[in-house]
Length: 267
Image (cartoon, one colour):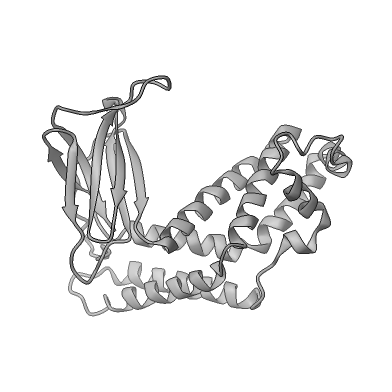
């Protein structure tokens, strides 16, 4: 249950920690990928260099290709309605922070309106823009977007950043209602469960996934300085965390044998 009480539970967490997430449904898997690619696309948008523009466009094309694999728009609409119903059910709960709850309901309503206003047909930039289509087609070839392969791309990269940036922001804006909704949905899902401390003796943690309110996202938090990370595997009935030592890029990791303390949230 999401925490909308006026007093949030305290969590004994280290000051510096790293987080690992693992999706338990295909919808959340897609949303996490959209979130990452959108963050990359927005980050590189402010880079004024040609290489920065290439990185930005690469992230944009990854997003567009991900959108082509399924009806992402409908999945987002369904999930917004699910989250709205969940939040609405908390209205009568004792000690609910009504201002926070109502603010989140308003946010969902605004996101639903933006998606509705954007039309029923999701923008397909790869069909509408021969420029993007050709770059995307050549991107499957290592080094296939060199200037001698795509002179129009080379010309675009030489344009002033203000000109490139304006066009790039227009492309990003075409699917901003979806990417913004995904970001808010994932924020709500992450709030569904406060991380709790767990300890395992020999680096292996297993537990069953039971009950009607099945989690859809596993979050594991560990101290940055610990030199340990989890390998997460999950099925319909249970999931396993195998904690291993980081030993560099040239050596296989080995399972931890000593006790490991970590924070776990099932959202």
